[in-house]
Image (cartoon, rainbow, N blue to C red; front, side, top):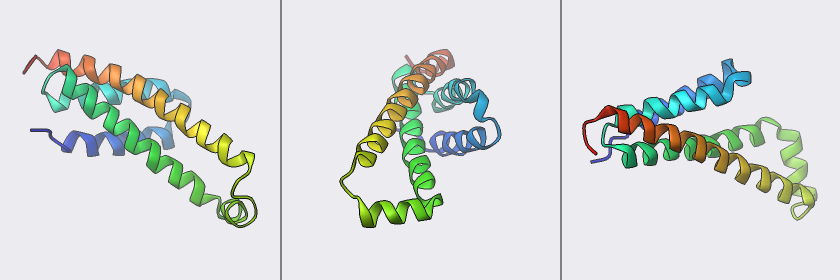
Length: 120
């Protein structure tokens, strides 16, 4: 059965890395993906799935935090121009960041799950 404990720990660890070490984000993502894949302990496929799940949830949470922290910009965006180029640019940036997180964390999570050697 899939264990959600490492997923929650991974989400918290990504938030800590993004707050305290934003300049070393790629190294943090690789390390966190590896640790989540290793902690799941069900082989490389489950390590990949858990790491991708961590990256996806963090991307959605991070996007909501960044949108709602700039309240004045969010309010004017919703009221005055809901179908402008800004929506397309924000959505494109979100999708690129989501793909980036899923690839980096998924590969490192698969390596961590492979190195755990509980199940292949």
